[in-house]
Image (cartoon, rainbow, N blue to C red; front, side, top):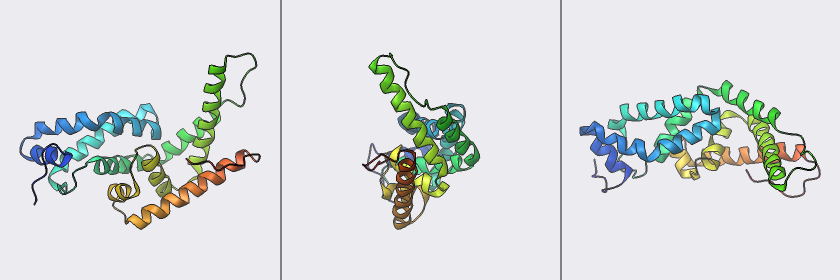
Length: 194
């Protein structure tokens, strides 16, 4: 096993193998982003549980972490994605609720700032409705790219799938999103990128 460079996530995990309290560094570094990702996927109610369980699983598996990979983000997002997948029905239900909760139109006379917020909420509702229609494996890849900021190589590592599979799923998900969003607005002439 190679020695991890100092200061990397791999270095933190390697030290946490013999000094478990060191794992708190990784927790402090990534808990907010993992929690935010889970909240976007399932809502705040389940996000606390998913984020906490992600780090519990990661801590338990720290001895199996490949320290040749300096960035632990894909590993952590992969754990979170697997935990979120167990809540697939809750996620679809959450997206459907968001889609229904979106305002249909702005009320006349409100300030421009309010109109902008209503427009954003309407778009969010359409996006949530479209997300609910995408196959779970494709949605997983799309959201890891769009919301977690991972590239397709990192998504492949996170989900333990070939890079080509990650790219194919991402393409299918983007195509499905474009199709779903264009059906909502037949006058749309530009492509919508999720």
